[in-house]
Length: 405
Image (cartoon, rainbow, N blue to C red; front, side):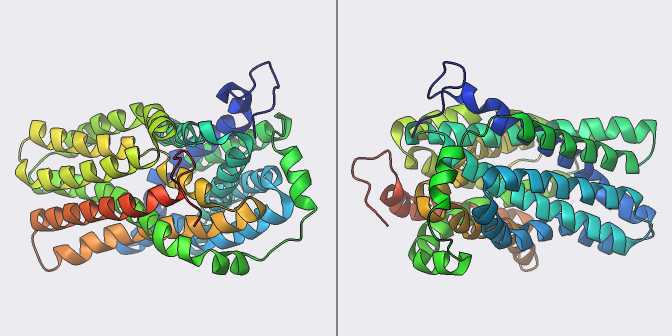
């Protein structure tokens, strides 16, 4: 399968840039603008710190709840229409959150944004998987992950500007406008998967449950690897600020640490995809997890701004080296005749890992010091690397020795 030759660029990423990456950049910028504002909104409505934290978690909860239904919906109406539905649903969620006069209404708005994010993410992944040849798949999906990172990086700055000029609800307005902009881009961009969708429409639709049962071995092996990767990434996000605070760094210094680490992370998304396409998926998967584990083990040895920044940069390097990895592995393992249904289950595995990582950190710190917990979790990441080394090559279409699941 090759990318349609819309502008004499057959088989290049330029042919899909507007269709895939434009809506992603707008959507992630909008969500990034509101993510830091959710807790503030909850507090303004009278929530305690604990309840405000629950409202923040509602974004992830909505994503979890939406994974399997998103797979079913995308399979029924197609990836492009699913993107349109997701953009409208997200705009509605932003509007509800903007006008919320109670915590219950705010909760509903945030859940809708999370549901939309799940549908948007699955549809974009399936869309790109159909649109690009296997030889470019990792680069296309790692670029998608990189564009998402860029949006989440820019969004908070945009949100801060409008909140300072107006009020907290203005951030949700920015999110809603970005969602509508994504809708327009999807609507006007050429449908580069129309031929595949036309062929798929002739086949009988299968339920998500039947697809996941058929491919349960893949989900219980390679899917566990995806869970492990997303869990390690989530631990990184929670661990760095906690350690920075424990050694006495100020909030401004912690933000600087995150900024440096995030910059390294963002710079690696295309090299990561190139590495996976050129040398196989395991060439990025295993080093990424090993370096994440090394960064977690090094973090307890740091006590100054420079040392913490160095350890966080190692973590950022490991995270960036695996940019697009989970999406690429899911695309590789997904059956062409039931791709969306499978990806719903695949993304659920990854999202469960993202929720489980911070919970594991919390549980460990209840019985040991934060430094010891960091080392234990680093060892866990190394074990994840071993698991990936075993299972990733068995589903890698770039390797001559790859075999069917």
